Image 1 (tube, rainbow, N blue to C red):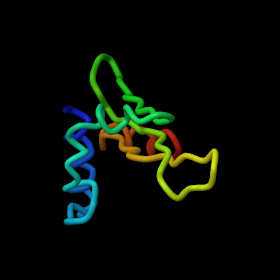
Image 2 (image 1 turned 45 degrees about the vertical axis):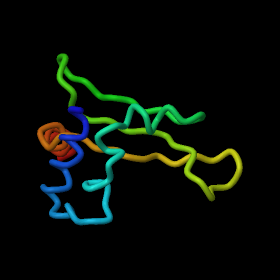
Image 3 (image 1 turned 90 degrees about the horizontal axis):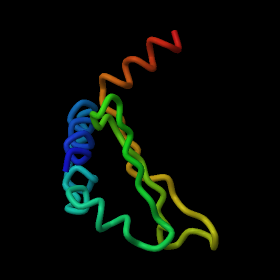
Image 4 (image 1 turned 180 degrees about the vertical axis):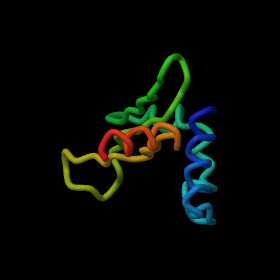
Length: 88
């Protein structure tokens, strides 16, 4: 899955590709199945037909009733750099 590659690239960039993180989580390679859970959704960001990132909303256990968590929000470095240029 292309988004899994982006996620792992971000982890390597920030040197956080360690056991216990999403880098090694098997669900990273199958976000489609993970986000089939009721009240969850995952969006893929595209630019000119190329996947550049994504993020999801997930009803994480132990959250208060009616709450969800923003999860797996990752953007390719080339797009993060463009945002930083626009802010400066």
